[in-house]
Image (tube, rainbow, N blue to C red; front, side, top):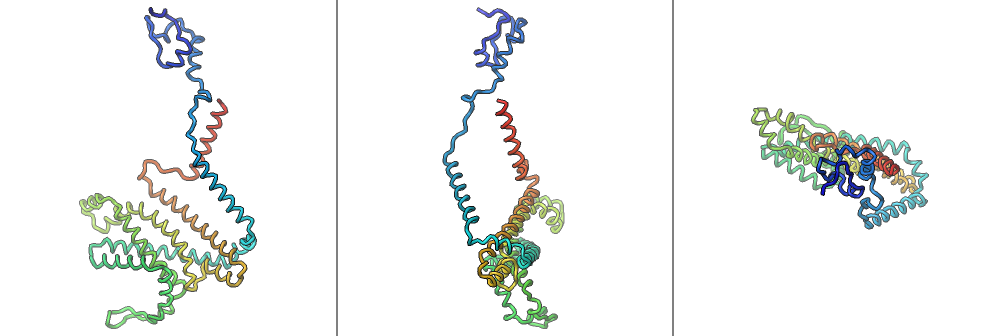
Length: 354
């Protein structure tokens, strides 16, 4: 037997099936002329009411994660407590040495050596990468031999060998092999401490930069080479205008990462009598033996600052050259912090409204 027109379903029935109403003999129940707004309001409130505390979905509990986090926090607190309370660190002497002119002069030398070695190493790496990608077997063999040798020999050995290079060759000449020499010059006049440090680091850096550049060039799709060749473009134009811009997406971020290692490698130039940041600290430590630990802490903090700055540069360089590769760039740390604050504020407002 059908319901008479204008009959409204009960609250329990409306809560269970909020979107489906039982049809009547004369038409839909929600379109009945006898159903007033006062009768439909309880059903609408039941559909839009927030779920109770018992109906909320509880997140999965992960006790292992909480235990590991607690252990890490306890260890970090103990480490910071040891740094703050151990008198052996001599933080007053650390503050004294941190901005001393001797330390700052060494820092300036470190930055100068890093900048020159980075530029020369990158230029040498590009030439070596082109040699390894060349069709000439002589150039390929020479490039491979150079990379193999300088990636195998420790950097400290290269620096010490260059420092004593004048004992092997007192004069250098440019001319015809086994023939007359056109130019001669004294090697000892050119081999200053700065020159030895820059040349040694550049030779070592070029071997690693060559592999970075070669890997970036090989990462370009082969179809790009074939399309450029099909257009009849010259090889030089093809490389500089088509291949290299696409390869930079892989080259630049990786080489910036290589620079972070170069900053730390400059500490070895102290062994060729160049007073960089580490060399200045070592010299002051020999003069003031009681301040060795504060001086080492000064060097550590300055290297942390330099590598952190390079890491920030690396992040934004990678983000810049990643444009077009992913559909959406990942948010920056500031954007993540702003998003987390916005989400937390919205959550607090929703909980307060409930």
